[in-house]
Image (cartoon, rainbow, N blue to C red):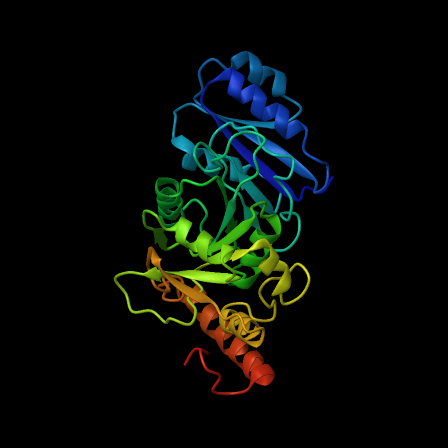
Length: 324
């Protein structure tokens, strides 16, 4: 069997939570084809349960506890799937966990204590999609921690890892949006830090009739027509302004100009994005584009030029709001 997705589950203890998690994983639909890799992170009290798993799932055993990131590394090394779902803790997963992951960008959904914050049986209010080149890296984890600390509404986080080979910005965003379950969707770069009280003003602006809104970025100059490193939209807007079915951003624009292309669609409809100054974030400002990795930087620069050529062939030169 060809495995499309590998689910990596680190375990340290808590037999009841572990059994509930494994039961929910066993109930996932067969499509996309997936496997479970359990990483025994020097667990306690799980010997009998782990013995029952042998033959049904892959079990990787660690002799010293290393935490989720170390467990993920070992689990990924044993993975057969091209796409990954990394679980931070044994949690009961929804049967929609793998929706949108089997196709498109390599989607890594990190689900764990505090990340999928809503009572059982209650759908998340907002889905926060984070495209990243390193789902287990310091940047993505810092972004997730900031979301955890500042978001009171029921939410889920979908982290989309697009790093091997890099697929740019558009493909992971579109994959994350397809997997979203919330009534609202937030697209958030992994170098964004939401500040306390960031979400209610954005939600209020959408509810008042603005299909796409974005917060104020503190500490740095920013454009006030659209800032695509963090923006929010309603479920209706996802469908209404999609470049094509299932693709919010235009797939032809992989790294750059996709925000301007969306901006033009919104302007044409008479509903340009709205800056909500009451919502505040910090932003690292194009850390990936400024990468010191020469191969990545060269790829970004070459793809940016291809994106510019495609954009100008469709929209012309000198479009207001387009990158200089």
